[in-house]
Each structure stands twice: as structure tokens, then as C-alpha cells.
Image (cartoon, rainbow, N blue to C red):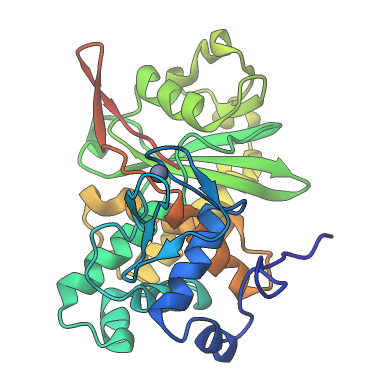
Length: 323
Ligand SMILES: [Zn+2]
């Protein structure tokens, strides 16, 4: 396997906190790191297109184009845009979030960084979660199990009116040997066919084989370009966790994480952010290098563009099902 390379020092990310501390001892070091990731082939001026290997750094992360004299902020269009806090503090937050197995709480982040307020820490965590999953990229392929789950709900799934007030999460899990491969999750407003189709088309590549139970919301989904294998759970004689073991494994981990780490205290309107974090960790659960998670999050933080939570498409509200 190819080793990750850092454009400056040979590897892409620090392996330990001691290394992290040396690499990013001040804000200039952070600026240079971002610059190497953003402009691996040298700085390109967004004003005049002038390309240079050595742009003038004017401090505070501003680069000066020698040709048109335009100043470009290294953080423009990134997650760090508009923040008055030092970049090193952001880097520390990202290290803290990615180096812990189950992530960080706002209280923990506030304490470690010495941030003034709980709200700041909370906002930072949400910004970082926002960067953890890139919408519309890397769709799931191959055979994919799809199911929905009532968050925090136990026992059998009742898709009737009684479940109306509960929060529903749609889950897609690639079949990877006997276990799950990559996953995608999203909070969904209901179990209707349009909602489920939207979730599938956003998260699963066309041509994939969808495996679902016999819920009517999945009927006819093959017209969208998928293969569709239906298992009628009640007819099969096996409970759902036997018929779709991977997605049910993910669902039970999600429950444990949600109840254990966050004490079930996530408000439904913020749930998507937490699902993003869960997905980010789950899809990278086999990487042993914690620094690699930091690096991936950094890449995505730099590439991050704000996504509106809702878009109006054709006069209807389209829920974004990022994952
Ligand atoms: Zn220029």
C-alpha cells in the first residue's frame, strides 16, 4: 500500500500528539499546511489565474498575488473561514475529535482547548461534523442493504401511525463479505416512497443491488436504475436481523452510541450532524492510524462548502439527505 506523503516532511499527518505539537507549533505552520493541501501544485490566484510556487505570505493567512496584487485568504471557502480564533486552536480541536475513539463532547472540547464558552465548543463540533461527510460523493456500490430505524426504539418495527412522533433514520450498508462495508445514514421525515427514493438515489450508485424488506415504500424502486431484491421478513420466518444482518448491526451500534455517548440527548434537528460523525468514524473504523482520520477531516474541512439544509426544488421542499 502506498504510504501517505507529506508535501513538506514526507508524510501527510502527524502520528502522535508530540508530532502534532511539533508540526503545528504556531499559526504560520498551520497556514503552510493548509496551503500545501489546497494548492499542491503551487498557488493559483483566483483573481488573475497567475500561478506561483512562492506567493508572498502577508501574515494572518493572506497571500498576495504579485501580478494583480489581489490578496487571497487561505481560509476563504474553508471551514475556518471567518473564524477569529487561531488556526492552531482549530487544528487542536480536529486532533482532539479524531484521536478519541468515540469522538468528543462539547464540554470535553471546551476544557481541552480552554475555550471561553460551551456554545463556542458546541458550534465548533457542529462545524467539524458538517465536514465529516461530503455530500454527493463516494456513493455506495455493489449489494446494499437498506432499512429504516426508529432512533432509540426497541423491539419490533411498527410502521404505522403509532410511530409518528419518533425520529426515523434511514440506513444503507454495503455488503462486504459477512459484515458491513461503507454506510450512509440520514434522518428522514417519513417512510413514503418519495422520501426513501431520495435517500437511495443520493447515497447509492445506480446499478447497485438494493436489498430491502417488503415495505411498500420501496416498491418500484428498480425504475430508478437499481436491481431490487425483496425479502419478506414475516414470510421468511427469520427476524429482520437475520435477513439483513449488516444494516441491523449498524442500527444497534447507532443505538448504543446514541444512548451511551450522547445520553440520547440529541435534538432531532441536530441529528444529521451526529449521523455524519458516526458515519465518518464507522467508514474508517479499520484505519489504525489516528492521524489519518485527522488528515481526512482536514482535507474535507478545506474542501468544505456550506450546504443549505433545505433546498426548494420544483416548488417542493427537498430534504438534504447528506451522508
Ligand atoms: Zn492575481
